[in-house]
Image (cartoon, rainbow, N blue to C red; front, side):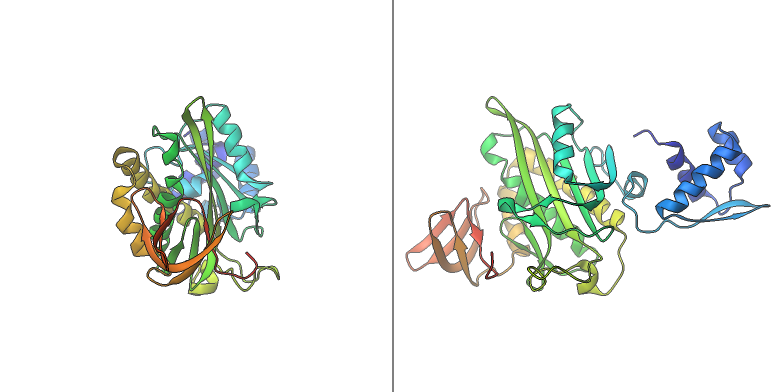
Length: 323
């Protein structure tokens, strides 16, 4: 992806301990005054840059930013995250991603923002987001698969997210179909929305919210929500978390398109929360309780009830009283 002038400055500063303003100006073919103005903007954005009249500029710390260049630095992908739209504040990244899909944006386009004011979760719920504390992102994909398989992407994304978070030594589990938990509390959620044309998938927008630095939550969710920092006691760079997910998800997504969901059943069950334990499940028509057996090759959940094994394609596991 093409880099802005400020991104080119950052790339240069990463390569050397000190970089003079004159060298940067000559390399980028702009004035030293323009270089100085860009440096001030970068400092305002959160980059720690020091200057010295004799030596020039030095990048000391890149901070915890969700900028395209910060994410791109950790990517090993071919498509995912190679076109990134970053916003300081949005109502929801899903809206922008849907607009990008309609404008024929390339597969793998990522929308991220530092503060999402009207984030949405499953079943129309509100996703709580605090400024610069979490990750709000939406990824555009265009899978060439039958429409009835699109829902499996939520599970594949869940596997990728859980596996990538575990690389940071965070003991996450998956609550079917779209929640990521730590010690029984929600740390991340996935919202998958599909656009269709005639009888085929035009695009799928995968929205993901991750609680990273949150220490406190609103009254209504404080007993069932948590964050990476709260559970681990360590610090995180959000861009690294995003890049780790995209790297993992691109590989799994490619396998899913080629092979279907069958090969992922074991991986999902390895990460499943409350597997082989008593659970309660709610559909639009009724509520059922039984032992969680796992999922089948279509992603359908399997419950052992008094009537025997029962499978549910569309339902919700009930963990918390006010769900």
